[in-house]
Structures are given as structure tokens and as C-alpha cells.
Length: 95
Image (cartoon, rainbow, N blue to C red; front, side):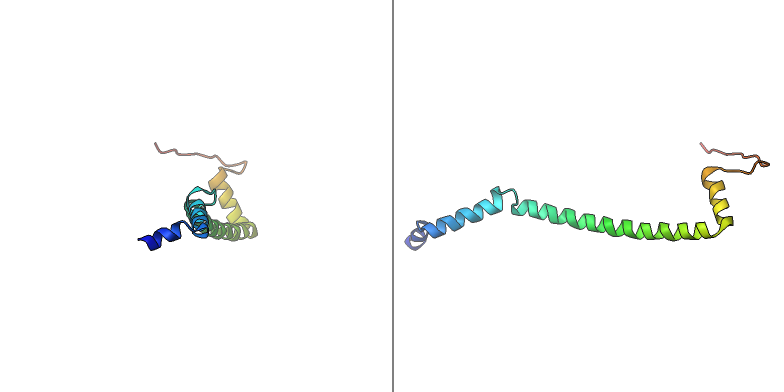
């Protein structure tokens, strides 16, 4: 036991222990915060992949829509309820 007490009085041991305690628990970049930040980073990277895939899908649909006038007319009629001057439009709303 005296062997261990001898090391606890050593300046280098005390300074190293204090430094480790400071870095693990007290510092603003401590281990707990680093873990939370890495988890948040992983979540954001997953979201980034999702939105990149969604963006590519939307761009492909847009290209197809702009290249085909019939499809563009169908989209305008369904989404924005557009009509020709000679047509009547009836919207049925379900409760």
C-alpha cells in the first residue's frame, strides 16, 4: 500500500491525473460531449444521404415532366386544378 501512496505524491502522477480528470469531466470538449456530437453527426449524415436521394428522384421526375407536354398537362390538372376555358371543374372533397 505504501508503494501506491508513494506514487500519489509524485508531481507527474498528480498533474497527469488532474489533466485526465479535467479532460474527461470538466472541459467543454469532454468525452460525453464528444460522444453526443459524434452521434449527432451520424444522424445528420444519414439525413444528408436521404435528402440527396430524394433530390435525385425529384430531379428525374422534373426532367421527365418537362420533356413530355401531356404529362405536364396531367400534372397541372391534378395538382393545381387547372382547366381549359371550355371545361368545368368539379372538386369532390371527402370528409
